[in-house]
Length: 114
Image (cartoon, helix red, strand yellow):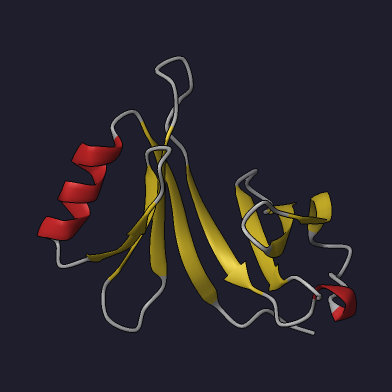
């Protein structure tokens, strides 16, 4: 089973407010904000951007999220290095982390089973 393309871009930042404002000035609309300095923005029908603030001692990161329709049916080829298998997230999905041949980490996200 292949992925269904890019679902989201996850960003960490040292300043949630400034990062959100930056994307809003580029045409993104705030869909929701959490009470812990994070939130989701979207521009049209494309992938959403989720931004989360991290402490100053953590380097800001960018991660691309690919959509997987069914975590149980997904079987990556051995060429795809699985760093962490699908695990439940606190935001109601299942997420797997994989590494590409150049060492970049990617997230694969699937709906959680009810």
